[in-house]
Image (cartoon, rainbow over all chains, first blue to last red; front, side):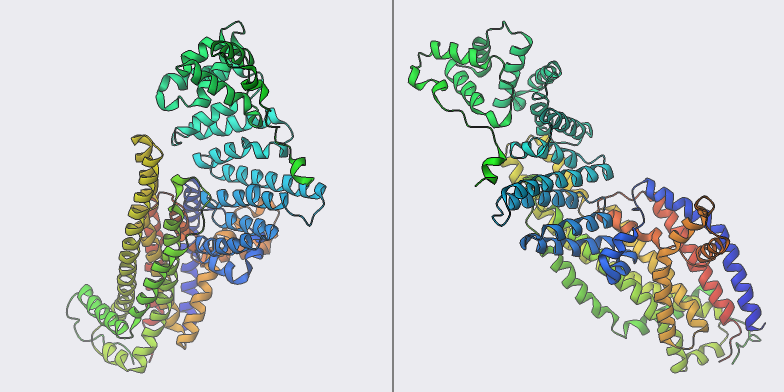
Length: 326
Length: 308
């Protein structure tokens, strides 16, 4: 048989068998994508950003390896405080390895915490621009984390990281509406717990956020009671205090001082806890009934006027203007 | 020279194939290909030191290093196995011609299919042994590092007064990032991809005129094969996208002729901590088996009456 006939037969076989395997391979690709074993195809922009050599390596089945290299590069950008380059690099990294939680968390941490702190103290910029850069970094970090959650909806740590970012008092002024932010934080923590894999602190942290959402006090109180009933490990000073103030909100005629003594054990401990809560102004916790309870306990404990908690100045709420006007 | 077909052929196909495979394996081992294991050992150990300052909670301490070890090791395995598959196969036929071993073998009553299958099996054996050695090294490094990470995490968790349930859950999570069955599935996927490449290089070497040509064309097909899935998607959705007839035909030809190497990129997901179901692994074996058999039969088809 001459070479032309052979080539023709081979080409025919290649096409015929190719036609037979095409639907199988298409189906297998979809199946692998469904079980999370195959990432979506690498976009043109990602290919452009990583350059030709890395594209070839990444296309050759080494996407995570390229992501590892880029992570090292991003660390250099971090040490050199090149935030824009860092953000671009993390965008590329997560395109290459969208299921690695570490990259989403690290990228968001660099933007919302490190870059934001850098801009806060960047003396080269005028105050207004520093404030805007600070705010924009935090929002960028939040958006990055939310993108990570959309890619990994069952990852408890990413939800918890978002909850933590949204309930960080140092970041409050970056968000437009505080009640909405607390509600978003509570929801993030709730989704984290709903995965069934989160550590116990996540539910408590979710409750701390929920307790600060206006008009959802009844829901928060129910959650506080559940957590309290579940065991001593949940009875942190913050949880006890929020349980107390939410009960005071539900029943304004309640004797808050007596309930505080019941919850904290002694009048002294109750007074110390209530005083501490009174001073925690930055975190914007509710204070229903706290003032009345403090007054009653000061009478019970015969605390002289000059040592009264009311004579101690309250720490001012966090105001970024204080930082940016320096 | 053509094969002597008049003499009766002694022994089974398998025994002949195994004899040629053993010879090809020995021939390749003598080329000192295992020296690359020293480089792999350096890579596996060096990947331990990419422990960047971490920002996560104390419960996640050290977990990133485990991913780094897997990423570097599986990356190196992929690279070594594909290079080995292409270069070793590309070398075999020309070397046999150069040493005149081919004439001696084909002068005997050895079917040409047995010769080709034996050569391919020898290369696959070499890749398998290399990957097994690299796998042992990777698992060893990973096991040691995982136990160190777990120890560190347990000490931290106990210090912070975690409940036993939480400590156990952390342990399970960290172990999932260590050496497990899915990781072995990923190593198998690396082997399957290299097997396809070896059989493809064998096909090319049956009509190629030089080792260099076989190597270059094989590497090109390897990289282009990673776009096959894109071409298939273009073809399957071209009607909705309003693609022209030529674009459709081009995409169809591309997807019919080239192997889909993207399927074997499941190793990335395993590095990221995904579990590889046995069923999916089985389907990958079927795909790789199809390509290996098709390319080997096609090689025989070309090689069967080739004159030397």
